[in-house]
Length: 246
Ligand SMILES: C[S@@+](CC[C@H](N)C(=O)[O-])C[C@H]1O[C@@H](n2cnc3c(N)ncnc32)[C@H](O)[C@@H]1O
Image (cartoon, rainbow, N blue to C red; front, side, top):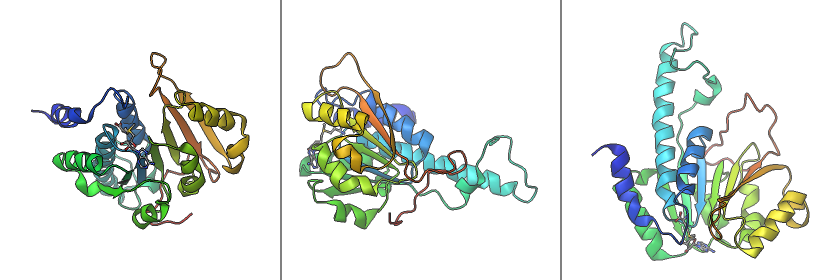
């Protein structure tokens, strides 16, 4: 069985019509693949989790392959044909991405951890069994500053109060599931759009909503990008270090 079919078969058992990430999980994977975060965080685990871990693993493998290719041509100061646009500073250190997940339900965390283990990717993930509210200090033991966050649990207010300052101010992305579903989500979305209420405390950010117009609940994602420290957009690869503090 090829690798893609095996992945699909292993993760299928985590899929549920009630959690609604059937199309969002592959989208998250594509975002991780293209932005190559080092430190990722997920709040509320499930079908999406193996997609995140696998995307990080694929990035790691690809980055190491590219780093070796670049090193081979270093003396001649020529880029290999296969890497015509390589930003050399991205390849200065090893690319060692990692996902921290927080989940309040023990059984669910076990099930997802077992799936990630079955895929041979357990070394890229740290699971924390906790209510995410009040758990930042435990998260910070694993990683301090996050380049990519998927929030699929409530309440959002707690995420913004406690975790926003741990998002990389140099372009860290936060994806929040179902911004058009719950009333509290729609209210938060409205304040984020107008920069009022709690959004006044967040500093600079960019945002967009990708709706799934055929759904009432578990509908689409809100994508935020923290840009307090973005200075040289085209020349500063998104790269935090495992224990870098804000
Ligand atoms: C909608 S499901 C997650 C879906 C998952 N991302 C997926 O793609 O299937 C929400 C998850 O968040 C967890 N959760 C809800 N509130 C939480 C909290 N305050 N802290 C930690 N986990 C929470 C739930 O137990 C549940 O597993």
